[in-house]
Image (cartoon, rainbow, N blue to C red):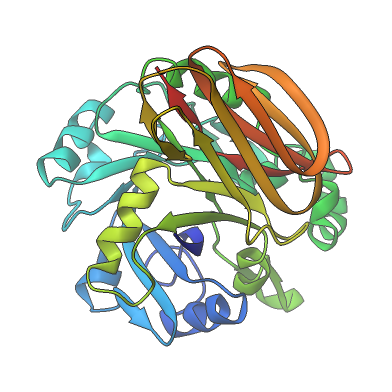
Length: 340
């Protein structure tokens, strides 16, 4: 399998970001990304103007963030148009995405209300819609502003200068929702940056420059085809939709090289894959460095060990995934193995 490092959920001057596509691609290359997924608000100009494709080692894929007013947001992928979607209800625009053979990944689904920052977004509710293939389990920017309040505006510099002090990892309620939904259907998790690189000109200050963001929370994808092969855009989008991936806070430590698999009596499964339970199954994770590994089964922690490699034998069906922490801080979240 080939490992790709992806930066997902990025805005440019085509919507409300401050960077041009050449500038963003340079930042992605410098940060070591293999894949960059742009998600401009309610438009596909990145695709229409010919930017989608390979650029000196970085594969750029164009999606669109559907952003209805005072409603949850959703990223549409593998589509050719999104005209009018922001004026539709969720059921309506999801059906329109499906009609293009596209799929949806929910953006920052936990919702957030921060009037001081102009944010009023309710939580996502359409978890079982077939067009919804996954969601942003860990949205870096939304994680950072969880503890931000208007009365802390005077500490904005400290919030920006030391983001690691604010980063907590995925919200417990969102993890609980994922574990509940996954018992009935496959649902892929990915990371999200929600990167805009907003400028404050009179202070000569960029809030989270692109390169800085691209080195934080990333999605590591596994594919059979290597980068540069034919149909590589579809290859990457398939890996995202199927959940053949894990999320890592690479700003804490680079998780490249991590491997997780489930060995059943008859086959081996990659993260995100599903099979009928046919007997005792070995669940295995190998890390590039020692971490505190927890195995979650149907939403409950069942095994914990600090090591570089952990193996556990599952004696009954369930939905199993790994979480890894470094010195108590959230680092890695794998997509599940679905043993039905």
